[in-house]
Length: 477
Image (cartoon, rainbow, N blue to C red):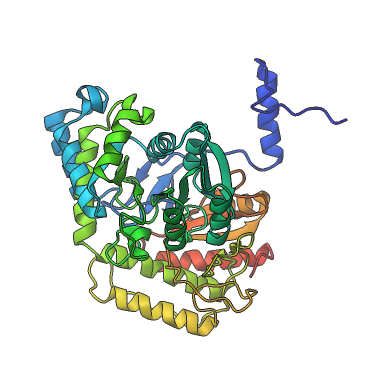
């Protein structure tokens, strides 16, 4: 029998056993490493950073709208800090709740079209709060198999029975609901999935959840500010109201370039969370300067719509270029009437598309949205795969699957993903390899994310470099 490799569940208090676990991670190419950003090169932008004395273009940030270093957002934080100080000093329910918190909650409720919103220090804490408040013993929670870790942990902490349905498979969710109709209290899913970049079937999940009297919880951390007709996320994309999606979770550290998170919903929901959610009650409130920065970012995001239009145009440009270069993008299966499960994220990409589409100049362009739409139509027409469907699907009906800033390059093995990461680093790009257990075994990838702060030239150079790397590794789609 091979020797037992220590794990987090059988380690005794011995340094050697800790080291054995680390050694095993190294052998499996799964050990994580941090990279320290020394400085940013361009004022107001975080896409070009200095790391270990080298200048790198960052294609791994979630700063989708380019607001993380926006001068107006920084100024709002500084001005508030002058008046309120750097910390809140206590939890919201003691003396830590300030005027900036109240204003931000009111503005987030208006932005999402909900009665009220409640601020949390992180999205992780917001999801723990929702899941543990709305579900309990003798009940059942259903989660998409690729839901964020915070939803999974919240489901486990709730002490409810825990069930997971196949990714983006509304039919599987409906079947599970029918089997556990009497006990299911919560159905939870991401809006935009952080590692795949696809959008959950919220319309079908909403119908199924409502028919079985279950709460539908949507964590739209990566959709809010980016997709939807006015940037209000996946819920807006599907045209769903608060009755269809009663619990909406969002974060402020991605498209809005700040920090923190919120839950938006009915007055009764927010009041219940304030009374029962341990991750809200027993933690220090978000500093008011952070709330002030978030308010300014929310204002800019709604006013400067070109940011959203531009990042989606750049994402389309990247997809077109990657298809032409043979880069193996992850393509989401999007099938109506129950989306197929196990192949929901399939290997491969569309056929090569010829030509490049010039985007309008950064910072202004009223016609960027038209350019993006034309590029998408041209791409689909050339590929013959409208809707982004995998070519192997048997006459599926396409469901509108919007382009998102998250564009994974599927390489399969963790070793291959790490090797590609190193080669991109040598070429001047910061693109992080994503490996198990964050994603399923055999689906290691480079997670490319686009920002409104990127330039067309940077995107094209990344595509060209990826094409060379994938060809050398025989990973061409």
